Length: 303
Image (cartoon, rainbow, N blue to C red):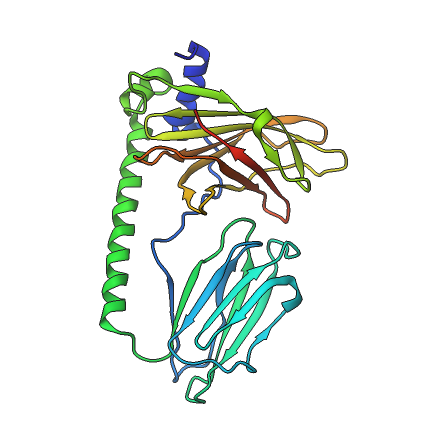
C-alpha cells in the first residue's frame, strides 16, 4: 500500500475535480462525421480536423473526377490516395498545428452540386478518421445509425455529468477516494517508468521523471517536465494516451502545476479512464500547448 502522502496526492488526482485547472480534453466520437450537400445552397467549406501521421478518410456517395481534386499544400501530405468514390489523406510531419489547407473535390456526373469544399485544420494529436459526404438523399439506415450514436453520446454525457456532480459533492483526500468508490481494497499502485520512456527527439521539453498510477477505474501519468535551453515557457492545453492499435484511453482531465519557465521543471498530471477489461500497454502520451509545439513520450506502461 502506498504511503499516506501518496494517498493524499492521488486523492487530489482522482477525487476532487475542483483541484484541477481543466485543460482541453477531446473525446473521439462514436462514429463517422456526416456531411450533407444541398444543390440549392451556395457551397460552404466544412472544417475537418487532421493531424500529422494520422489517417483521415472521405467516403462520397457519388463518383469523383480524378483530375478535379485541388489540395492546398499537397507536398506536405505523405499520402493522398483517391479512389472511385473515396479519398484518404495522411499529413506528413511537416504540417504545423493550427494550419489550414483547402481541399476541393469535383464529382464525375456534373450534377449539382458539382463540387465540395473542405477546410482541413491541423490539430496536434487528433484527426477525424472517417467523413461521409452525401450529395443526395441519405438512406433510412444512416439516419437510424446516427440516432443510435446520438443516444450513446447522450448516455455518455449523462454518466460524465453524474460523475462530476459526485466528485464536486464528495470530500477531498482519502475520504473523497472512498466516498466516490475510486479506491478499493487494492489501494493505489504506482510505478516509476522514467527509464522505459521513449521521448521524441524534437520535443519542446525534457521529461525528468515519469510515474504512472492505477486505481479502481482510472489511471494517471505524472510527468515532471523541464524546458530545454532556448525554449519558451510551456502551458499544457490537452493530451492523448494512444495504444499500439491506435485506440485511445478517454482522458478525463489534464492538470499542470503552473507555467513551466525557462530552465525549471514542473509536474503535469494526465488522468484517464481505465477500461473494464484492464489497461493494456504500452501507450504513447502526447501533450500539446496552444501553439505548434508538442511533446510525445512513448512506451508508457501502468502498474
